[in-house]
Length: 150
Image (cartoon, rainbow, N blue to C red):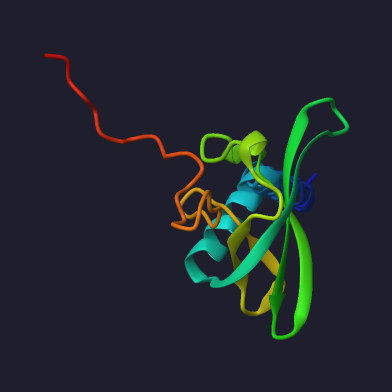
């Protein structure tokens, strides 16, 4: 019996093990929907164009698993085309209070120039919400300065 006849089986087993390991690494690095949404907001915040819009409604609805989802519904026009969109602001609670958002409030909307239907009103780095005509944000961002006690 020659040992050479076992080489194809060993080589095939090593190939399968390598493929399984590679698949595990790729699956482990897959981004969650929250991470993808955060990246979308950041991309539009950095590269988007600003246009005037109007907040139509602010709602808190329950999703399938019973957790409340906060939605900001707004309208804006780009090149004569009217868009109506909603943004899930559940993860941005520290920047905006949905209960103080006024219906019909003018706001700024950032949109993707390549896809005008892809837009945001608020992100971690930017807010288009206006409290009054001066453009004062709804909530101040948490201060990053560390204060020492005297």
